[in-house]
Length: 68
Length: 264
Image 1 (tube, chains in turn red, cyan):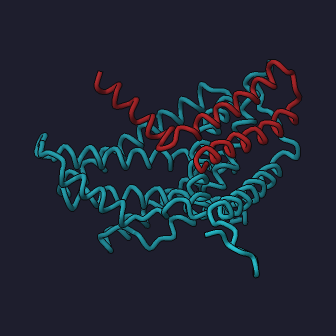
Image 2 (image 1 turned 120 degrees about the vertical axis):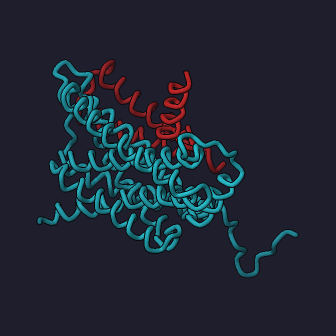
């Protein structure tokens, strides 16, 4: 059990670090872009541009939460 | 070498350099407080594990995963790493977070090492070994991701590896020579630049990689193709400057105009 726990802790340290909001923001933004592609049937150009705006917006929200 | 090659070499060098400086601080603190045998044993184990991880992950990713899935996985990780660095850089530039100080980090590691219990396994101090191993492996995995991403994007992984390897070598030599943390390195500025690059590549790749969800499984194409990278870089840079300015203004209350009365 200990190696699994250590591996889990390592992955948390690597991916989440000291601020889980960033990881959540990235997953939510890219997830929404994926939804736009799969369910919305949007073109590649629309998905990439809207996806980039979603990433910036999600990051801005996480930064706002940090500093409010 | 072309300008693009120099760009690839310098960016992988700078990004890897920052990670190696952090790893060096940990190893130095362990070596001085817990003994060099455990610190070196932990570092060597981490480097071997890192080599095995890089070969296995590289082979698995290249052999089993479609390009778009690889871009999605690596892109999301790059984006998370990059935005974490960018967040810290923005907060530090706005005066809302203390600048990263290797000397302070070193002192904290030393204090923790002195308080830890004494447990020896096979003649090696367990605490010093494990902390060195974890520190080097953790920072090393980030270096690996940076080298692989930048290298694949420029279609020149060997050159990117040279940049990463050279950074590790320079940090190692400097560490041996000065025998203390490299606190004079402009780490915060380097991290800001690397954070911008990682955020740029991460955004580009993670969204290209969404093509794995299309029937063809081909990567999505950005408008303007690779030129979109430049647009993203400029976009992240401008966004970060706007955020820093806005946060600074929020932090510093507006000074009264001449003749204006200030409420006591």
